[in-house]
Length: 307
Image (cartoon, rainbow, N blue to C red):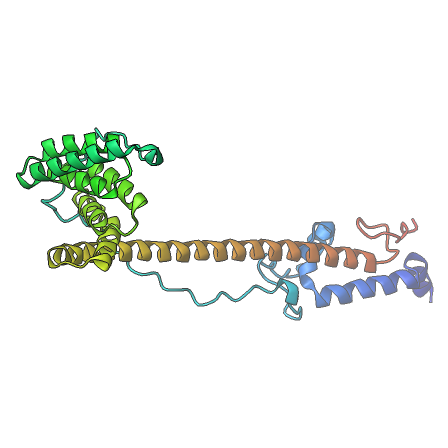
């Protein structure tokens, strides 16, 4: 009786009940022993020869915990297979490529409404002379005559197209392209301008623009001589287009994969943060469950033992 009374005086029933509740919590969640607030208790148990369960890994979560649907990782959609890009092959040698000309003369097509009849007549005379020189193979002379004619009447689309043709014969593709562009602006149905410009683009290695212009020229006025060249540049343009499209698709696939990887990383970071917060909450709940236990470090209200 004396011993029982002494125990009751040293450990009041409410403190014993709190300690019993605390032991039950530890029995259900032994990983709480690894909380820093209970380090003293863990050391005490070790001294008594108790086996402390290993600390849980940070990635582990409660088996009974249901995942939050709002934070549930989104299942990645099946990845679009990236097309195998062929190694960049050196461009096929093209013996018909020309060195670009840099001395492109300026073109003025304004003021056509102010041309007098006399200027128109003189321009037509010069045009006839230029065509004669062109037929003789004197393309420099023909360019000179056409330039004089265009100064008198800058609204003749065929003159621009013909001078562009002469520039092409002189292997001046940029000057020819400028003239043909002027001709097309004055006459969008100038088949000759489209064909000459397309051929010049081909000689500069710009096969896509060449294919577009030759296609337009053939639609307006088909000829067998241009058909073979048109097929050649269409084939080259198609290969270039396919390579570009493959690269674009692969670039989109890589960007989507990087986006999904960043999302998964962010979800993993949020998951670890949530686990840390839940661990802290469990530790606080365990400490609160000890009630008024004081006297021992970390045990709130358990008063000092009577001496």
